[in-house]
Length: 211
Image 1 (tube, rainbow, N blue to C red):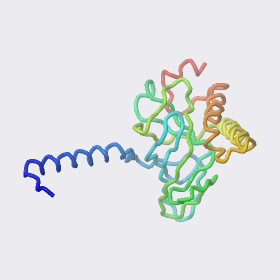
Image 2 (image 1 turned 120 degrees about the horizontal axis):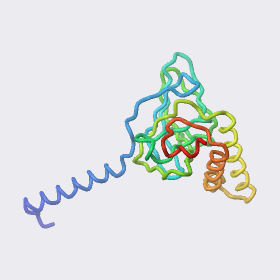
Image 3 (image 1 turned 90 degrees about the horizontal axis):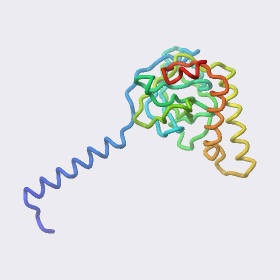
Image 4 (image 1 turned 135 degrees about the horizontal axis):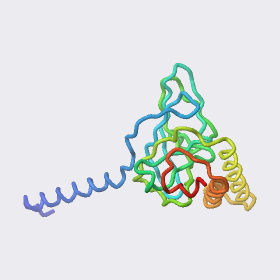
């Protein structure tokens, strides 16, 4: 192999460094957000990574600061994008089961127990809840809403989602839930727009919705 000159070596080293730098920047979409209280719970939560657009997967960390185990359920939780609510993209609502990040098989669970003093990561299936806003991206930083959705709204959304998944299963679809995402998204928007309920993160974008 022919030896490279010092100049050529420097150019190669610089090129490799640039590729590594841009590769890390492109792949690193995790956000160093602060823990906030989980509504109606003593657990704490922070959103660390969003993979999606109109809907997708939101990875969150759950922390249990208590001396006893605590159970986490995502039903009714929604997440607000950082920034001016007048121009911010859609908020994300958790719908359906979650997956433990440590579970390589991706088993879906409705709730999870967090041991005393432990911090775990889970992946939530999330769907946009503001049909009139633009879609978010992995670059958007989210924080949990101060309160959960009203139970009636959360139940309506979950019922619509379950129906969409059941419909796919009747078709014999192998992966019913992923296949039903478009239908679930439509159900979420429909449930929200039928009777608008003010949630954390409202802005001027919602003025016409509140009347």
